[in-house]
Amino acid sequence: MLVLTGEKSFEEMKELAWNKKTAAFGGIKNLLSRPKPDDINIIHAEKQYKPFWHAVCSSNFEYKRNTEFSVKISDLAVQKVIICNEERDIDKERNVKLHGSEHCLESSTKEIFVDAYTENEEDLSRYLSMETREISQTEELNAGDNIVVPVKIKASYLVRKLLSDMMKPIDADEVLDETVRIETLDLYFRPIYAFEFSWLPKNKQNVLEFDGITGEFYSGKVLREKMAEIFTEETLFEIGGEVAGAVIPGANIPVKILQESRRRKGNSNS
Image (cartoon, rainbow, N blue to C red; front, side, top):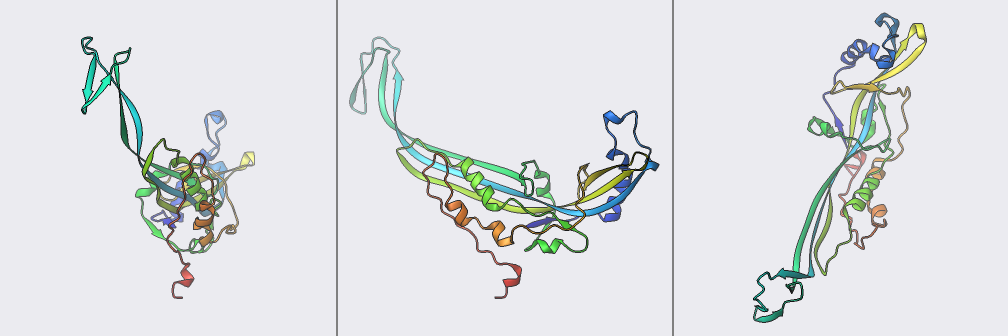
């Protein structure tokens, strides 16, 4: 589990939100009725930590299969051919049939980013180059008024999804290697500042969320209260039993789970 660091301070984000407050009620449809800056106040602010998964999966399939090759003989004068001391007939289409073996290698990689609360996939690759620190429990982010959005999507869900996408039936007479590897399985938490604005004359409220690192903003919502954890850290990353028992459609491939042992922070000295 990783938390993105280097976010702007609350005061910096509040100043940014104040400068963007008309955007909370703006838009093309409101060109004729945009609010005046003096008519808008910030009535609530909070810092959230939103989780997302980053996973990378690679596959390697090496196999052999018997096949028949066809060689075109264009010279009409040729009536027979000898290949490897064996005489071959030419058929009516002027082809010579050869039996052989194909040595095949298929390799691919898939990378996904999944919102760990909503299950939506989105491109969050911009965060991979940013500074992070490792955490052992989400409680480390819950200090003060911070709100940690709980993780609804477990690691086993991502692993099953990736295995289903990457594993496939192979047209082979001999399989030499058949490996699907989870290269990366990281749970990130990114800092978000949510500001609720009130347009006083219209008695309207809207919320803008500001990325604490990039400063990007978009429509969002405030949570107001701390949210209960849904899964323990061990449960979040437990993939063995659930994935080993999963059925991979179209592929009769045994699933081996090689999972690093994890211990919670409190058991590090046991």
